[in-house]
Image (cartoon, rainbow, N blue to C red):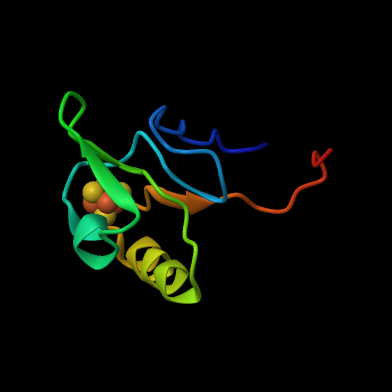
Length: 83
Ligand code: SF4
C-alpha cells in the first residue's frame, strides 16, 4: 500500500527540487532561498523558479525544505524508474 504523493505544482522548473499542491503560500521558503522560489498569485503558492546552481543555493533550499510547515518542498529521489 503506497500513500498517494501530492501533486507537483505546474510552475516548477524541471529539475531536482519542486513544490507540491500542499503549499499554503506562507512565503517562508522565499525568505530563506529567494534565488530559488517565486510566488504565483493566482494559486497563492510558491514554486521552484530556479534550480540551485551553487552549493550555497542548494543549502538554502534544503533549509527551506526542512522547515516548510506543510512539507511541500520535495526533491526527486533516485528511483528504479530512471531511464
Ligand atoms: S515554505 Fe512551504 S508552505 Fe511555505 S510557501 Fe514555501 S513551499 Fe509553500
